[in-house]
Length: 402
Ligand SMILES: [Zn+2]
Image 1 (cartoon, rainbow, N blue to C red):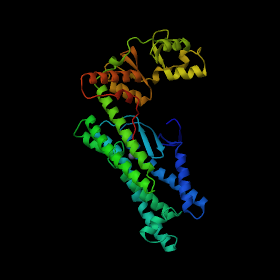
Image 2 (tube, rainbow, N blue to C red):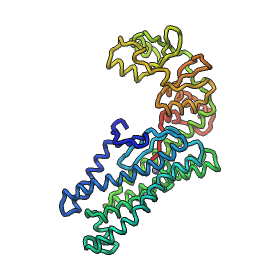
Image 3 (cartoon, rainbow, N blue to C red):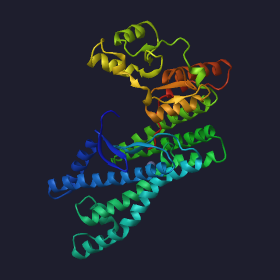
Image 4 (tube, rainbow, N blue to C red):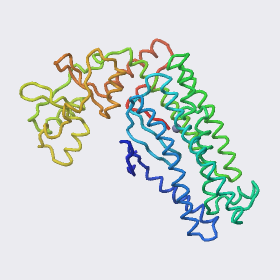
């Protein structure tokens, strides 16, 4: 998502658009200009329609975001993609009840918007029919829906909100309906089992959506968006199931188990060239930094090191480049690895510092957690139990909702 642009902020939540959004605007302009008597007017109308459609998607995401925040869950941002929006939550809800309400809030916003639009839509259509600019009859209205007009625009937005609300309620995890299903299942089963069932149902829905998309495509009615959504549901569901399984495994292991035993530390006044030497001669990628008094004051991360080497050269001092200690999540040796992982995800950092009281014990990186998962997965396979392969890859996955 590196190529997203922030368009505005509301209540501290920034709304970002992906560059590919421009393609959708262009498509809107193109599709509507063909249907209008004057192509330019049609193109402008098409752009307005698409912008309003995505305004409804944005409000849907704010439904999720504001309910999540009500439960103390931070919202990193809302990102608009051509196939819809994503509210990026900083962590998972604490219990199924919260997840249910966060998931259902999005579709409810759309139904509320439809209800709000209904009287205005009926008034506008009635007015235009009396004035003769709109023809009565259901088929006539449908056929001329792309013609620029106030009644048409309101009708389109009304229908779109009903469709957005209903479509998102399909039990296709990780879509809203699938999350609602998972939350309901999780009230009776454990979280991992509930997720597995929701993902299975979601994948069956994805196959149906894909078949529907291919059918629409063959009869010339589009269907590309449906295929994309089916793909997203299929892949996204599997990714989230693995993340949930990994988290369940990590809950039974402590930070102390992931601590590297032979980590090398740096002093604040050293130059970056020393870190380069160390990286060349070991597998270590992130270094704890100490002042001359022996206090932990920060971390030289791989990303910071590479950036600084490019900008300042190898003779820059570690202290000027490191991530200060205040920005690094802290945990105790008996903190569960699931919580350490969550602290990293929440803070957006790939390292955590382990302290026993005031004593610094070492750093844990996302790579260390992935390593623990790989070892556990291998051990499980060795015992002939259900394979937990691939779990390690899921570390670093952010908490997402679409
Ligand atoms: Zn939603």
